[in-house]
Length: 116
Ligand code: HEC
Image (tube, rainbow, N blue to C red; front, top):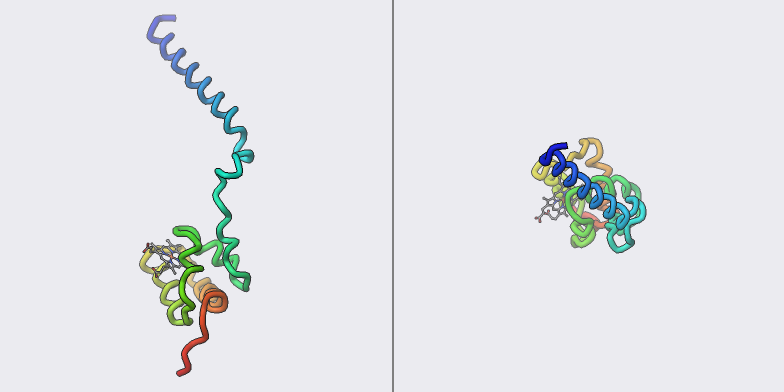
């Protein structure tokens, strides 16, 4: 083997050793230390019909705190928020999930609508 080829092989060998030792440290993906795991934060969402939908759609881009720390909003305000997420920020919400999401948000984080 000529010298340059040998160098490449040595570099590859070192890389392999490096990767192997890291995989020993990390183990398989299922066994990362508890403190390294991201919290399943959507569990903070209040129970209610539509919670799974919100858990799937509303924590894609930001933390669930954006939802849970809002003051109680009426239906119009939640509708406007969900529409803004969809139209302005590009949330990939199917149009038929807007109404069920708004229903959930109003019942879990809303306030009764002002009398007309
Ligand atoms: C495509 C990304 C995306 C998705 C999905 C998304 N949001 Fe947002 N959201 C944003 C961005 C961007 C902001 C503005 C962040 C900032 O100002 O720091 C925001 C802000 C908010 C705020 C703060 C108030 C405001 O109007 O800016 C609320 C409440 C909110 N989102 C609720 C929701 C809800 C409810 C859903 C699910 C229907 C959702 N978001 C899904 C991107 C998204």
